[in-house]
Length: 93
Ligand SMILES: [Zn+2]
Image (tube, rainbow, N blue to C red; front, side, top):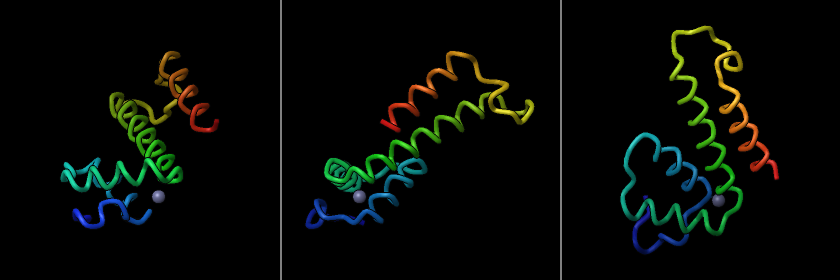
């Protein structure tokens, strides 16, 4: 866990752990600050965070249709499919 002395120097491993935990619990101020500072400097972690957020969004959309046939493409609207395609294009750019 970062403290005020190492807030600017967390590892990629710690940054990804904090990013994952941010979906499960509220990060402390120092944890959020350390993650933001790290992601400003580290493109690898920044992209990883974007991918994790994308996966969470996909799972949220899938969860909205829970109980239906397990075929993601069959239940997404054209608008949602286009949003996903746009997000993928942005990530791959
Ligand atoms: Zn990193």
